[in-house]
Image (cartoon, rainbow, N blue to C red):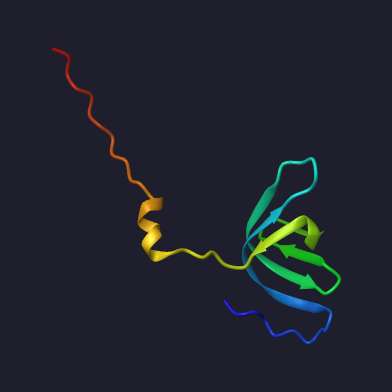
Length: 90
């Protein structure tokens, strides 16, 4: 997806992000998926999802704008398992 055109010079990027990961010292990390993200020149990140809206500083989060998946590597990452029927005891 392409970034939206923004006329405000304080906005670095405004686009859809696949995932935003938050991490704070001494705490377990958390993330939100499929968010509309606005990144400002002062390091503030504004995140909007269907469930919530929040702000953070860029030093406390990582923005994954899109996932990169190698076509050759994809098959080895997904394994389908089939259930076995229990064998009758003799």
